[in-house]
Length: 293
Ligand code: SF4
Image (tube, rainbow, N blue to C red):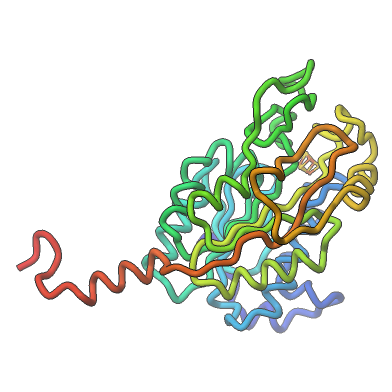
């Protein structure tokens, strides 16, 4: 945990907004482009923190590299800004040795499902008790707009100027198939649902995943029919269809503007978490582990 602020300091600060107490206002203005959706996700996360039953000292935020990865630097919690694609293994280690902490990973699609895709599916398979919030802007925004594992087929980016030839990951389907306990998708237009989903994730003992579809005008929107920051938000508003019981195999995000965007809290199930299984194995072992007498 790199930046640690005594909580007493945070609570004594004069705040002009209820969320200020959890934000490092000395770091503002933030780096995000006008109209970027990442600030909305940060706001929803802070609201969920403030309504959580966990004390703030037990809340940890871990991020990787990219525009979304900068979230950890704006929070007064214990946070860690890891290397590209490696936020989930860091969170897995921390949450395993300190199961009393509430660990949340926040990252972009490039960070979590492209560079770090392997870690994502294995954390879901193990049912590690962490929350993963993936802000999906359909490209690598910070590095100039390369296509990645979530870029819709046919969408244009700087590295797919004639349209993306690759089939993208449908990440909710991927993590649900791998065993995630809670899987949801919302957009940055669904502020209330975002906050409620994050609050639910904090109460779940197991791997909880939220995809947030988010506008990125300079490196994605302007090449795909959304030249202004508001255009993609209007697209989310007009095309979002809430279906909590959706067939996840049919909810891939399309590059065609006429296609619906299916959102909802899709999966909510219960199985023992990785931490619970480890504790059970230790408690039930009368012989001791390998190498012990
Ligand atoms: Fe947001 Fe895209 Fe700008 Fe990054 S490049 S800050 S994701 S709008």
